[in-house]
Image 1: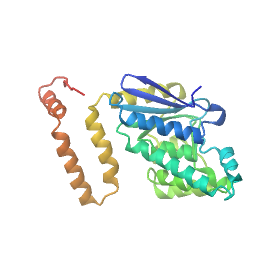
Image 2: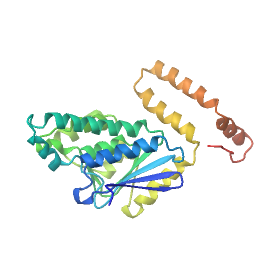
Image 3: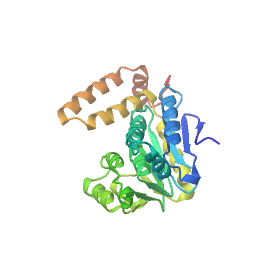
Image 4: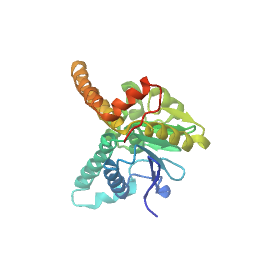
Length: 261
């Protein structure tokens, strides 16, 4: 049984974290599997959207604490292992945002610590009612510093700081209010809702979405004038594509576009 399963339907790839006995923890093996699959998807032009879900009763409970504890047995007390672990995890998270295809988290049960970071890192998220979100490492004496990076870029800073320093969980509804997830639906409709969103995204011109996703994250880091200059260039580049010309012509002529991609 693979620790990470992939199943493609049309232009949508579904990745399922498949270690339910460990609440789909981001173990060394899980991180490696995710990184390998993301690297594969990067060059897969047949896929236009990705859904990321978890098997069993939870989405993801964060890092594998038993594996981390075992890492302490080295002569340096685990320092090199821990630094490498968090570096590999950060690389995987950044790979999600640099992926050409939008990634949608399909969340149920719990998403805690690095699992909450994973939700915050995905481009969009759909959650089941009853899901709980937390960055609760502080409860065991480990401040969620790396999850903080993604979380603080998703929700207002005071609410992020409260979650980080209290270790309290928030509900799916509260997560939606804060902007951590896009939609909250009954668990019976969760997969349908995530698939529907992915299929809608996948129906758009892939090259346009690729340009837009890259520009979205790049411009967030820029001052206003630089952001407008950068995105102006991005739109000019987009306008030069044959399929964009076709899309505009089709809209004017009130017919479906005949895209080649």
